[in-house]
Length: 399
Image 1: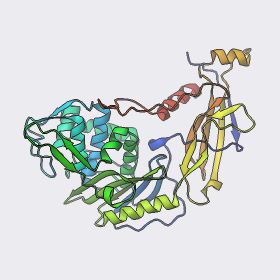
Image 2 (image 1 turned 180 degrees about the vertical axis):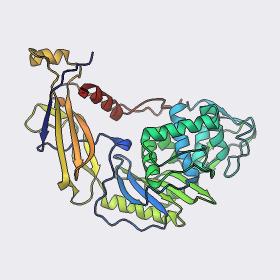
Image 3 (image 1 turned 45 degrees about the vertical axis):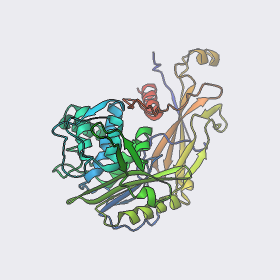
């Protein structure tokens, strides 16, 4: 039974910064006064994957065609809803799909995992339709899942009409939304592994030779630290690209829509992010809260431009769960929060950027749940510790 009696205490100021609590759906874009890179793109966006902070945006909310960048959503929905060892069958509606193709045979079966490699490395439209029909029962059913996921992530300028990205009215997204989607997807270890792969072989049941796929994403070979994500092109969307790279433990993702010089533009965007917005470690896990018998439940890292640390403010919100007349020892033995004492809300220039839990010293601090990179498959409805922590706070702090 969750305890309903709460007395909130707010302490503003003297607390060391602690780890981000929000991930992709959380922190708003808080762009510093740093001159961004020049690009040839109609629309562009750059995001820090860990925090979800948009570091640079050029017409980032302009709704445009996105071609095969659609397959980022197709892949993450399939990974979360399916199992990687399931066999996906190529139906008549998936066979010989127009545009880029894996040239799968009618009736051919392939594991979802291998189909996903073909989808993301070679942009197979036949794979996209086959995956959609397998997961959603039909392309239309899968599209419903895509749009539901977009709503869950908080993509407010996106709408999907198909799983492959062929031009269709009502099928669009924005550079900022695609940056948020990519950051979300890159937190999934299966997705992250697939998009970083340069070459992949897969069994071919109809021939004596194996499928051999070379990743179309040249950034994997052109840019130091590159580890994803997806190319795209149609005659109406023009050249589209999402790339990612990791340096010194920081992962960034860049998006351009309608960009005739995307490889060079992405290199400039990523260089800009790593140079001007490095991840700053502001506190460590289990760091004491000043003058209190409390410790932080997580460390804190956030991408900050030069001078921005001076604009960080912290607010400690304590939760008093003790029933009237109970001692501290009695509370410790019956406490339904298992030592959870409250949270720290973080703000940068007045904008909320995240929270972390704080615990009483000596109490058990639960580890951050890990999504297993299971060879057998999908993530299902697993959630990160972030959403779990949100649920805890929601129940504890509700009226």
